[in-house]
Image 1 (tube, helix red, strand yellow):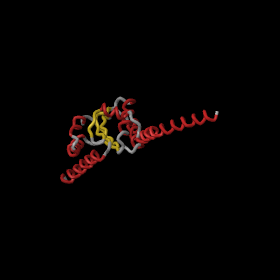
Image 2 (spheres, helix red, strand yellow):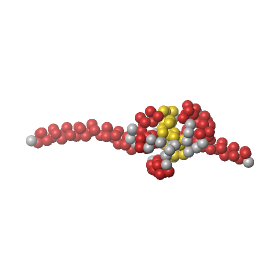
Image 3 (cartoon, helix red, strand yellow):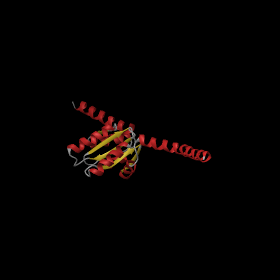
Image 4 (spheres, one colour):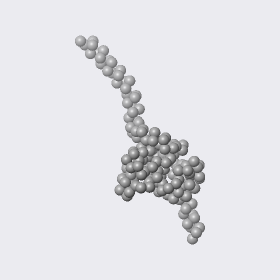
Length: 163
């Protein structure tokens, strides 16, 4: 019986370690003081952006981060923590930081973005960035601006000649 329980726990630790290594973005938050409505609202917002939001035992997460090679995250594993995993590098930071501004009981602790361990300040910096579609629109706008300005200039010259 004990071997079965140990095997189950090892499987959970391996699952968590895999999530830490495969995710583009991981954010650890402390959720102490959130009521059920706030928690459900937060989960809905995260689910809408395909972000997995899980609560694990700190001891299992500790073993998983050691296995995944992110030992520096261990100091943030105190208290009741939840972890957001995502394939989008910006979305978890953006949603959790916005929610933390409204609800002071949600505390950002640390995270991993594109394989690098980051602190709260970096998470807040990244939270200002728009989502992936917004960034693509901004880049396309930058590419389109010179062509649009050239078209306006040529139209202005054509208008002057016609007068």
